[in-house]
Length: 161
Ligand code: FE
Ligand code: FE
Ligand code: MG
Image 1 (cartoon, rainbow, N blue to C red):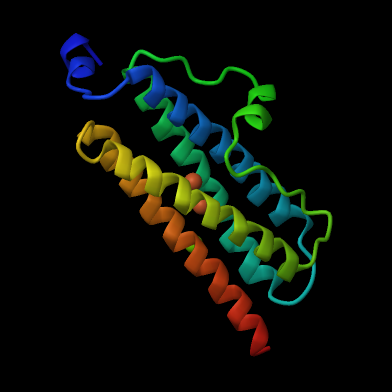
Image 2 (image 1 turned 120 degrees about the vertical axis):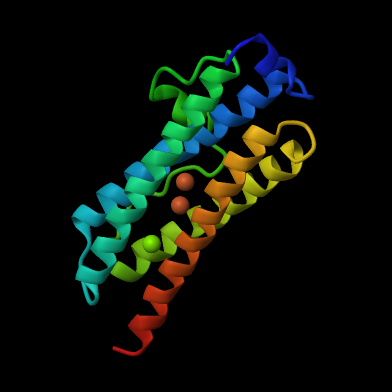
């Protein structure tokens, strides 16, 4: 983004970039948690859950791309090393040490709930100050809400099998 594009942002750009980098750390950890969870999954509804987890993993990677594009537009530097992911994350990482479908889906639901709250804060913060980041955060939040709903539907299906 050029000079005027940055001037349009009516808040501390450094603070905004920091928040976007925190969300970037979350997205990478969420991507891996979904992807590795899909590999080790065991138990009933494994096929349905595997497809959903892989789809969500792809969405998280796309979110990471959206965040990096915006960070660079704002003149910031995206996190450059995986070591930063643990240091910067809001939502953390839950290793799928119990490979049961139920446990893995529960862990990912917790992650989504944290993601929804994180993007809600970003949406509120940017609503009046940076319409471009606002639109991006809203789009991602919409996806995270759908993710939580999809995962809860899997738990619900398990009750009826
Ligand atoms: Fe995401
Ligand atoms: Fe998600
Ligand atoms: Mg889905």
